[in-house]
Image (cartoon, rainbow, N blue to C red):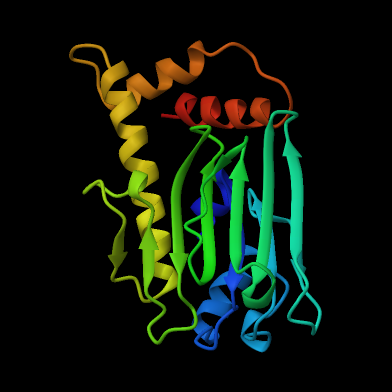
Length: 220
């Protein structure tokens, strides 16, 4: 969970209903991500959306007791990454939208729709819809993130399984890049060290990340 919190932007939007199978396990996992609203105690037809970046809760909203109130969140990160979330419960449009830099990534499935954007890779790495109104909370991954090329049902029954899938996607893409960048007969640690030390000096949060990576490899 800490790996996701440190490197990622996590966007959540509800379609239709928060779900009567939103149990303690799911609620506790979401709390570990940084969410404040207990969804287990708000499982009815309510709109809900939240944004977490690098382990910090940026904004979280839930509609009132009315079943006809939408929720919207709009944020801009680093003056370039525009994030827009829309949550409509069943009676007011029945949809969940998660757009990042103008592109729609939400599965738009009943229940929780979750999109993960990796700051280090500067791209969306996963989009999953979890039907928290059905026993077992079955999940679906979007086509672009599924190796078969088709949208498929997943046998994910817990947030821990989802976490492992996200980390695997991060690792696969990162290792692929460094193997391409790697020189002949160079070990992988040396490749990574050479890459981060060759980068131009950065500003702001990126500077802190760059300094952290260089310090790690200087100790190797």
